[in-house]
Length: 284
Ligand code: NDP
Image 1 (cartoon, helix red, strand yellow):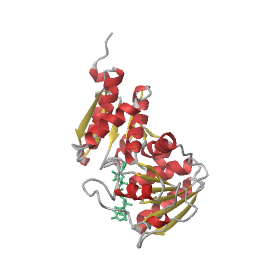
Image 2: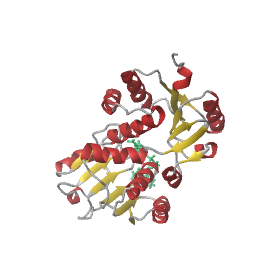
Image 3: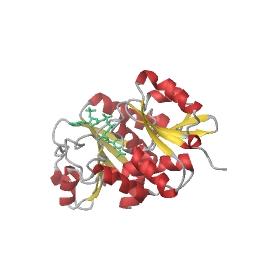
Image 4: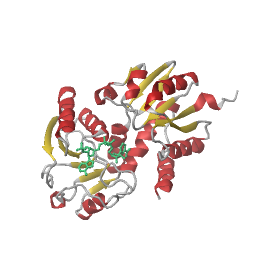
């Protein structure tokens, strides 16, 4: 018997959400595999989140992504939260297990998979410097620490947000964590293996903006990553490549976090090249 569309609905709740590109990559993946799934982009005001989650249950939706401002608030409306998402205190993907809604966070996992699949890097034993202490940084740092990173140097402008993340990492993981306040040009220590820009500096339309890093301290062979998906080739990555670094863009992280969600929902391996190609068309 043919399945109805209503058994196969997924989507994203956000506010504002109109510019969210995820539907393009998920629908491209469904079409490529010839499965009758549909990804909806749904505007949900903060005051309506509980009703939206109840509606998702009522319509038997298979899963949902959460974006700004719902990643933290959604936790109160779920039946269970995966351990790493619970440590982060944020959920970007909800999957269904029977009648139960389970919260996951695939952002940091997407970053790690991009690191391994696109750059061939295993973070175990590596010393990583992360710029920024917001949601993206939090997800990346927790997964890096869980994967056995030897040391995480956290560099952030505001002290309060960074100290909260340092405290969270120290309480929940075994990695050494150090904090450096970002109030002047930051030098990258000579023993750092991986440098990550996890701030929003360089995001469209502010494409020329650069994190205040002394690029002379970026050495040949260092892996330099950016979380900015649009444009994927940031000015920061251009400078890092000029210094001989191996660079990794934020498009990979976006594709893989979506691919991990795709597998959680459908049980199928995601066609990552198709998803990447679909996003590249959107970002131009
Ligand atoms: P948040 O607002 O939670 O955090 C932003 C971070 O950037 C903070 O640490 C903030 O510092 C820092 N920052 C912003 N502007 C400056 C500046 N001028 N100088 C120094 N620090 C600055 O945002 P998110 O963490 O949610 O998102 C960050 C970026 O990650 C966005 O561009 C987003 O698009 C991207 N992202 C990419 C994903 C992907 O799959 N590729 C997934 C998720 C996010 P402070 O604490 O001092 O304010």
